[in-house]
Amino acid sequence: MKILSTTDNFKKGILTAEKIIGKNLTLPILSNILLEAERGRLKISATNLEIGIVCLMRAKVEKEGKIAVPGRIIGSFMSNITNNEKIAAEVKDHTLYLSYQGNKASIKGLDAKDFPLIPKPQTDPILEIESQKFQESAAKVLPSAATAETRQELTGVFIGFEEDKLILAATDSFRLAEAVIKLEKESINASYQKYIAKNSSIIVPAKTLQEVARSIGPESGKLKIYIGENQIFFEIDDTLFISRLIDGKYPEYKQVIPKDFLAGLRLKKDDLLRAVRVASIFSDSKSREVKLRAKEGEKKIKIEAQSMESGENVTEVESDATLKGSAVIAFNNRYLIEGLNALSSEEIYIGFNDSFGPVILREMAGEKPREDFLHIIMPIRS
Image 1: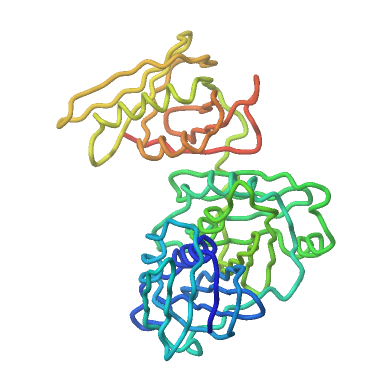
Image 2: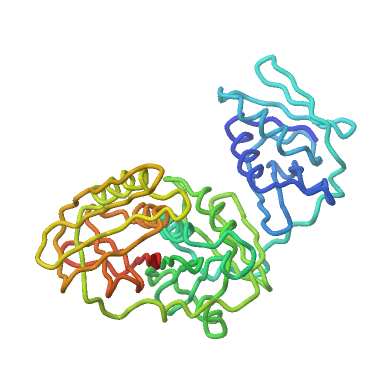
């Protein structure tokens, strides 16, 4: 193998692939990145057997070939190169030799034949959608996915298929987020209609969607989605992500979403977020409890916290409220902060029925809450 590329291209592919690899003591080859020079391009691949990635980069190929090299070593090396100069890469005796601007490095590699085969899509894409819209929706729901493996389906993101929209949802039992992506007519092809006739939903590992969303930039083209047997493929520009699907039944989460609310608060997101962050300084280190206190007829709510070790704090926030009686709702401060950070509008809506039921957060669009995203937090029963 012998190629010539720009350091920017080479670096982009290496650093994207490096994010996928992990420590695998039983299969050391998985901590490597596969470099393949073929047909006038460089293919950079990595996998941890749950997620795989293949990046196609432009390069001048003088000699075809391939090698597997340690991902952390080549990733650390490339991350320290700042100039967009030409870089030459050549393989001799299972060693990768790199040279640029008079600088040289050699990285010992492994035989590429030991690298696992990464599958390719066997069908046409079922969808092509705006990548930035998908990125925005995924980013809003991902923080609500569970990290503990006790219920594997909750470590994934639910993707529901409807005739004219996709629904993304995630929950860890303490909070829930749902985002709706409206599909353009030109996105709805025969492959999509055929697929949803037999399949209403899938569960995709949250880690997969995190990497897909991270790879999308301002100039990225449309995102292509392929679905195979227990696998999903996301293709964005010249990068293909491959992931297993999670086998299981996702909770009937829509049953948790109240149809109506007895109380609604409309307020400035940044004012509330600042108040919660200040209260968090004084919250108990174990319960992380902060309280929202609201009274009928008042145009302000109070965010408060107290603990034996820190003291107490009360912050008032201006609010346009429709409220009967009064309510005191206790939240885990981290869940409330992450829920507020997921909202992008200047004004937000908070709806609830009592001190212990689900609390809904929505973005405001003019005078009404938006319907394409919701975030629900379960209060602490203190």
